[in-house]
Length: 380
Ligand SMILES: Cc1cc2nc3c(=O)[nH]c(=O)nc-3n(C[C@H](O)[C@H](O)[C@H](O)COP(=O)(O)OP(=O)(O)OC[C@H]3O[C@@H](n4cnc5c(N)ncnc54)[C@H](O)[C@@H]3O)c2cc1C
Image 1 (cartoon, rainbow, N blue to C red):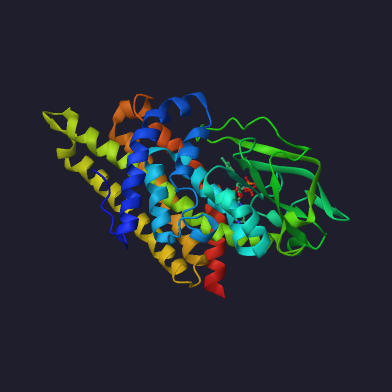
Image 2 (image 1 turned 120 degrees about the vertical axis):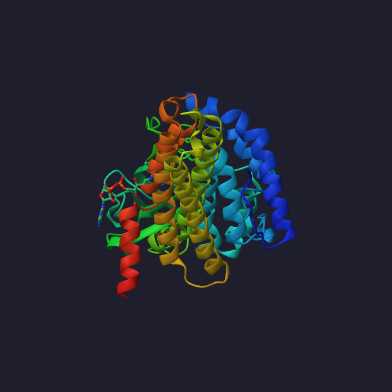
């Protein structure tokens, strides 16, 4: 059953219909094989881009879709309900464009944003390093200015789309002044000295390539710095507030996918002479799963509406990410339980959903870090 959504406009309802059509035609037929063979679905991102679904939350004047976050996130959720890796990729692409949109000069935006939002180019976001994940201010990758260019040396770990992206939004150290010594750069993939290490061998999201990006004397013109020197960490963290909403929507989509499989199975599978959904003990598991999915959706939408209204939403974004990913972990684990032994096999997608959701409690700030953000805001 498709999720019943109350969309704010007719145009946004059409967008959901378009997304469902693309998901059914282009994503569902490919997901199993790509996830099994760890193949990055570049052509799927091109299809989404050409349909206008990769730049939805950005203004139409820059080639985006001009949609509020409330709408964009529901599109992401629909994508993720069929294919988590593509949902994550859609959210990461939006995050990669965020710094240029918020901190770029008018010239920078006019020159680069239309291509980035138009769908042909795919982005990546390089903040983490091997020893600096939860604490990005500890980063060591350096950008040293020589005249009209910076030379970047170092390594950015865990880059989603590493080696696949067309541009990298890179945070690098321009002085030793802790978090205030970091600057933000937009680096094209074909810049000499920039290479991807071997992809990580992960427990899930196999269709989403994750790799360390190695910077060896990478020369970047000064015009490719976004914002002033020293503003990089605040640009990166501001982007993460929005990115966390994207991850909340992705987690909710995967949880919805798991719930759908579980309900379908529970109506067909019989034990003790009746469908397992007619055993109250099992039906209540399904009821709790549905409650968890719907409350996650309501939580991310409430945060998105604050953002759309121009109000502060950082605490609510962290709450949405925490609630949606923890709920999704529980829902996908319960989905495996509902299917019994079958749930533990690769004949059904629920074991994959469970593996995929785990990382959502970890990236874009672990759920411990979300609690830190929430509690610090409460203590202000
Ligand atoms: C598949 C995948 C894709 C990713 N994609 C990207 C990407 O595209 N770009 C990018 O920049 N990064 C990316 N990351 C990195 C990700 O954001 C980090 O892994 C994450 O922020 C955690 O950092 P860490 O792994 O270094 O863990 P650590 O920071 O070492 O944390 C280890 C544990 O300690 C806990 N912890 C740390 N500090 C505290 C504290 N103060 N209080 C309580 N608990 C604490 C953490 O919650 C965690 O449980 C990705 C990671 C993965 C696995």
